[in-house]
Length: 73
Image 1: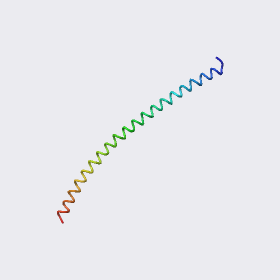
Image 2: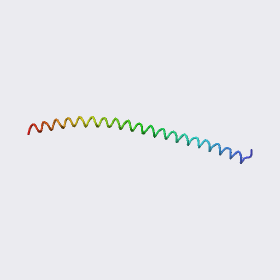
Image 3: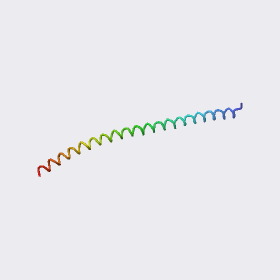
Image 4: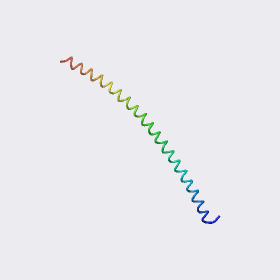
């Protein structure tokens, strides 16, 4: 094998390694994006439940305050 062939073989091996690293990076990024979306959905669900809880509580308090106000009139 000549120097040019050896150099070409080394470059091909490096290219294969680089391609494998890029493929793995893409897989890792897809997994991270999916994990992030799942986490965001969970937090959105929790936040929605908290907001609903507070809205119900404040609605009860507002109704009670309005009833007292009307009773005073």
